[in-house]
Image (tube, rainbow, N blue to C red; front, side, top):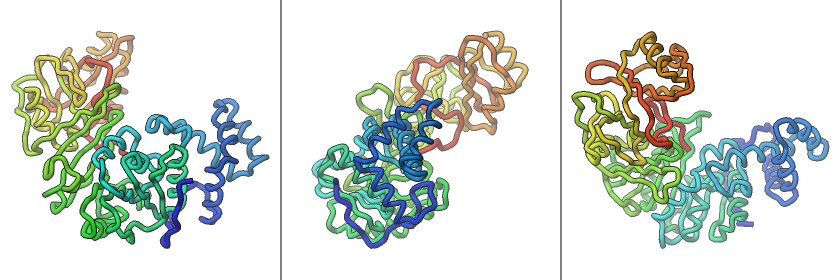
Length: 431
């Protein structure tokens, strides 16, 4: 197995739902990643919804309550992880660590910046989403203070043949980065039990990260999309927002040695079926000109573009205008095909009045109605309930300021993919 090197600062945060002694929990996870557990995980994975209760009861007789819980949970986590990891059936997860892990496609793209980079450190490595990709570039050491995370990361590296990776249990604040050519870190954003965006509340926090940067500035940090980067980072670093599976997933601070565009912003969008991601680099101060009227088409920029404040740069590239200075929606009179834009053909512009909307939508036989909004305080789901759409046709209702008024733009989506899976002007869920 990829070796786990003991450290002196184990994390006391539990990694499972059980409340037993941390040492006992770790021993059970060691059993989980062993060959002895695999056939039990396979039995749980093959149980359908109807037989799962019977299977669980049968497993309890052989394994006991805790191991049964781990086995059944692992089978379900592997199913959920398939959207992130093609090799999920061979891997190990916990619920929280899976949610936090960078998916394989994004991790591979990030890791390409470390080509021929020497020994790399992956700090706060979790189950190894980035670690697995970095190990494809060269030797890498994963570091996490959580013994369960380190155990699972090592097991995942072994399962997937990442022989250049090793994992150690250590508080990253104590890491000696002088031995590494460069490093990557995904600090814990759930210290208080829920996601937060303030770097000062991360673990390690801003002060600790700055100390690590003083020791070795060849670094990249994975942050929440809405995190506000301090000016002394942003001045020379490249800030990149990454979107995948319809949402803005993470923000990366590439410090100068790893930056392609030092001191600038970029947005990278992964589109389903595309061989390469779509990248935009530009000036966040550039605004899109306001349209005199809504054109034949409305465009919703990917949330990664919006988070990077590059809507104006994208609009300039395609000669588009914004429907309002208060909204990120763009408009034009020709079809633009771009993975960073969702395109909608305008059918009608309506007042935001339930009766008018209901009559127009029922007249068109629209039963499947997607409601999107930006720049207005409206609950899309409440709008749907008020309209109560009926029929066999589908459409999108885009609610946005249009110049000085709020309007409802009834539209038809062009193309099958969604550039942005969100329905409102908020930060989406992130890895």
